[in-house]
Length: 167
Ligand SMILES: [Zn+2]
Image 1 (cartoon, rainbow, N blue to C red):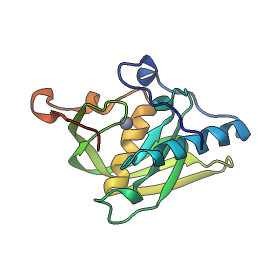
Image 2: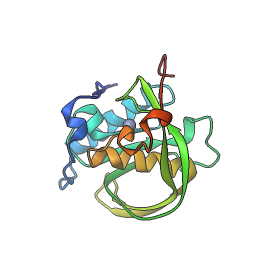
Image 3: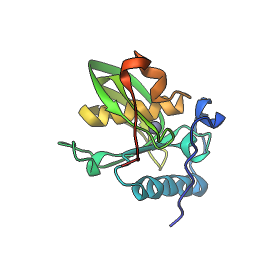
Image 4: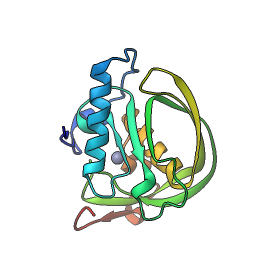
């Protein structure tokens, strides 16, 4: 097991846009494996983006299958160089983040997204996600653009909540 330390706000790496991956080698595979293990080591963590573990590459991993609210799930998804090219409908849902452990917030997101990305072997793929998985993907891709969920809050006074412990 190689677990990576989680960077927390206000670490400046969380605010920097990431770089597109161009080399699909064993080093990349090791980083992704470590990100997946790190995500799975945190109870109820359903997504992790490279800047959260101190890496500047445009990579995110997600796995909604362990979340209690999950109805349908694609399981583990690795997104390299992801871009959202279509979004539909909107919902407001409570979000949290390992990098901002003291707060949760209501954030407006699309309920359906279509994403273009590359897999670990360097092969491009497209995926449509809905519900919780669409929300997770938008949260993680925001990380890759240097955005945190608190940046998307519409009203800081009514939509941000302090929490006692990260569950
Ligand atoms: Zn996050």
